[in-house]
Length: 330
Image (cartoon, rainbow, N blue to C red; front, side, top):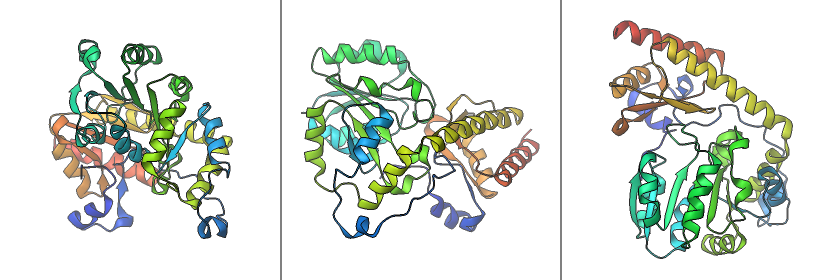
């Protein structure tokens, strides 16, 4: 299993700090969950059915004619590589590590490429995988650039896979509406923006035939009945969505300002996190953890990712801990 953020229970055991005393900034998930609707008994008692309104609500939310719900976008990340015969796959790195791992496990030859290298390697690839906005850097690529890459891949039957897990906060930059094109696949996460990662829901946006093949891979009843009820309610709550967009943008801007004031100018970020590069990342990560603040460490990149604090108390603890660090390490 690859390393991921959100491993709070492990931190509880390692540092001896009770779970309720942590400020968990390690996962990049909105810290304000949407309200949980009343779940009718039939959602628990009956097998899930696909004509209950979830797909329609999701199609309207993403602005697409067809899509496939999946048990978190992670399910698609693992299943998509099995839909192609072994080939050459480029993964725009750094990014969410499960992408490269999933294609490798399925027998593909994977090359992790930097943004400046894509043009050189693109015409030798069968598939290019891009996370946009990027996780963990927050880098955002334009729709024009992505569609240009897709056009070159599609000429040879190739795919462009775009993971838009952090795109809900900035939907104007999404290429979801372009997924009628053959070979263009967009993955969307539900849990991050809606603050409900535990429900395990995501969506694959692509042309109909590919979605049918993917559905056959995943099998029936892949989304639990209660999840379908909850997902539909959140996707239809436009007022709460706009409030979440505004609240996250304001918090992310504030977080960047707090880090900058402490002498840690972010190297990147988006509306759900800020990204920091510095020489002593492990030292800062350890310092904060001893004070009950959990960050996401990318030791091989020399970087840290800070999620959004949820409450005034969390903000105060973060500011105080950064100030303490600066005093001890001038």
